[in-house]
Amino acid sequence: MLPWVVIPALDEADNLRVLVPRVVEHALALHPDARVLLVNDGSTDDTAEVMRTLAAARPCVELEMLRHNRGKAAALRIGFERALEGGADVVVMMDADGQDDPAELPALAAALADGADLVTGARLTRRDRLVKRTTSRVYNRTTALLSGAPGQDFNSGFKMMRAEVAADVVPMLYGEMHRYLTVIAHDLGHRVAEVPVEHHPRMSGASKYGLARFWRGFADLVTVRFLLSYENRPSHLFGGIGSACFLLGSLVLAYLTALKIATGATIGDRPLLLAGVLLVLVGLQLLLFGLLAELVVHARQQARGGRDVRPTYDAGRLVAELRRTDA
Image (cartoon, rainbow, N blue to C red; front, side, top):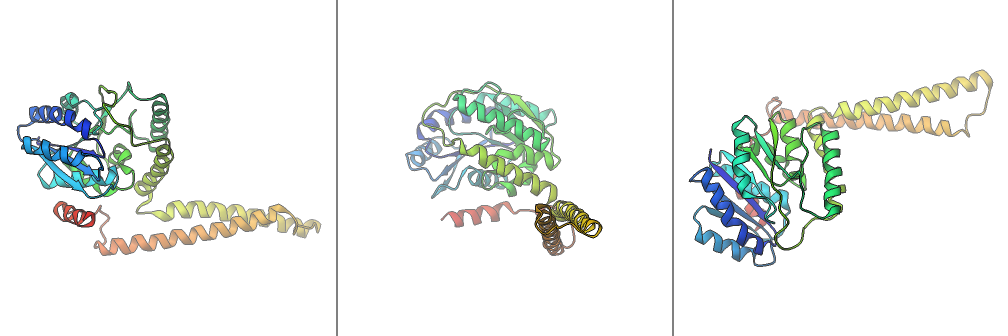
């Protein structure tokens, strides 16, 4: 299996000098034609120069240079497309901070050989600050609970996947969706697994992420669940909630009407009346929103010829478009 190792980097010049030679050594041990792709995500330090020096000294190292910072997900998307275009059978993603150990590559490859489609290097013993470890633990448990995907370290940036998995998850690589590659692959029917790996302290520099990533990650998880569960049937979600609101509001209004008729009681100043009217209106709006969403889905399916399939992607075309956008 021909592996491509994709390493996105933002201001990681000092770490790359040490990390890349080790990655090259272990990648070539897996396959003599292995490739290591360095994606410079708009770094402002000497990362670009270091990458060029590393590539000049090692034929298996390839480069993608982004003119400005586009985020890790976009960098990974470009890297995955470049790897697929280059004929990769296996795509590996690694962080550039040196915390992932390239010596673990054979363990991940063995898990693929055992039948997994995507393998995560699980950092069961973290070498990070207490706050980062705590937020990561909460994040992983929340993700497992809401997604139903198996795993203990969803946020690990050290993953190995088959080419077909990389092709399937590429359309979802935007924003910060890279954190949910395991969840996405699992929901698309791929077999996911974890392998415990050694986790090292960051070699130099500072982490690019703070506490805000937890809240952004939760919002992205909701987005992933919605897209994967209701992409082709939005009315099931909005229509279900809308029907429940409309029914509850109708029952409230029916109760107040019966009370008025039977007892002559004043109902105009009751908060329950406002609640009933609000529930009915919200329910109708959600029902109509669900129908409009169904029209959008119907139009999309008609454009595809009526087939309920995931879109296909031309790797070369997408890479060219992304390069042109970046320029």
